[in-house]
Length: 272
Image (cartoon, rainbow, N blue to C red; front, side, top):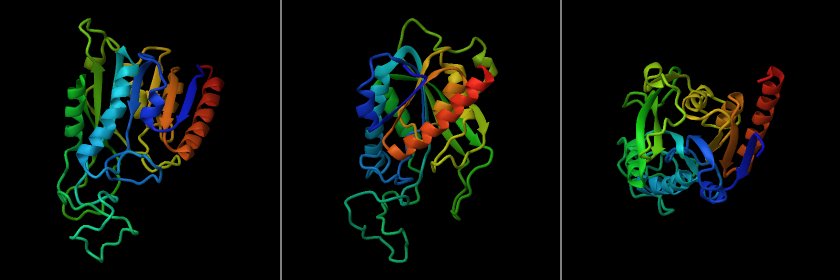
């Protein structure tokens, strides 16, 4: 395969076209629940409940489990959120509690568990275990420069969660880890949040760089089923790995394609 391949379509449909145990490492950040409307039919994140959101993710993660090698790793970046806010969820009608003064550009809002932290990472953790994954770490990504919050009745959230999960295997594979990774890297990572690159939710390239360095064999294939602007792909090329990115949005794949082309040219000039 080429050093980078971008597929456009739903994650489940595109992954169904990949062979069993064909990728070595998965690094991904799915759309967060109720945070953004990307304007694409079939997108994940605008389900009517956390439970339905986790079900949607679980369908993708089941395909990831199939295509991941037995000694592969999955690094899954997720964030929590609060009930009562975000974009439209539900039946298509305004809930009875709707405040006419609440301006949401015509979007509906859900008032289920209003203002309550929903526990999304916990729900995903349980879904991973139920699906047969072995969750090896819950990494805390502390944002050195967190985005500001308009909330006036709670503390500003300054971290997200990264799950490191592997497939069950009685042979105790090393999962591509270096010998001293347990001593050299802890489960709290301090990294700034990034902005720009044509996508509203960009994680820093340092994040997939660290995941791939620790959990992907040299020359291996890295998969991101929610590729977005292609940050995981940039990290993969920089480290000499091959990349498969999937995104439901043609526009974001265009952004990713441009970034990967620039990264490929930089790598070739550096002789890596």
